[in-house]
Length: 330
Image (cartoon, rainbow, N blue to C red; front, side, top):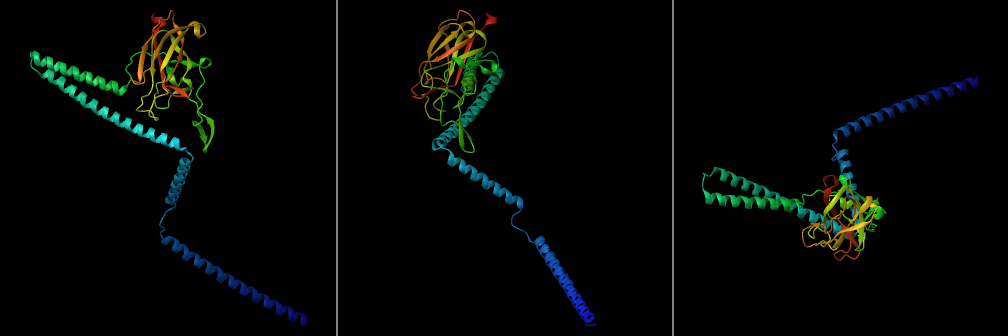
């Protein structure tokens, strides 16, 4: 009987404890849900000053500026100064081009008005007609002069040493390129490979500051396979002017040079076609008629640079052209 009474008493206590636990859990859960709903309503009503997209944009811009700043710190001081000079030169050239374009438009309009005025004159008026005709010719010559200055290339002769036409450089008969330690390819700010401009750069019409082939010293040579067999009649040497040069001078330009023709498919004897001097104080594009005529059609020519204009380390070639008569036209 005593054991039964004790067991009954323990069971009642356990039930009472379990009931209190259930009540407390219910109250705690209800309180938590109520607070959560109130906070959710507060988040809805509250307006934050920045949206996530705007925040991401600000962070991205900051990271980009930080990367550019680090890149500038890694860049040598000389290279920064060179970039500043190049940007200033390009800006000046762009302004000159705009001025030339405006002058061309004005001159064309004046020429058109003069021609219309000549057609509207009564006939005959000999003295006035002669004066108008002379004025028209002067204006036309002036327009052609401005166009020539704007284009800078009025050779009007086919270039058989043009790479896009099929010409190429035979490296076995060409001097080594100048190795510049400052011209490197970078990966994450680490220079791992020296960059050298290939010799066939001189066979392309892209003549901008720095777009040249350089070889060490003042003497070098390059063997060129022409686009087709021709009887050469003239050659053209081109260099940049001091006005657009980032260094402010063109001492690396070639001075004295000679041209040889190679007989028997680039493997035979050489014959001297002429020796010339490129004058850097004159126009940037200079054409030279060959002094010695070729006895037969040639497929290869060799350009030999004998001296430059004073640069002690290297010589730079921008463009070299070969003109002549195709073999099937002879």
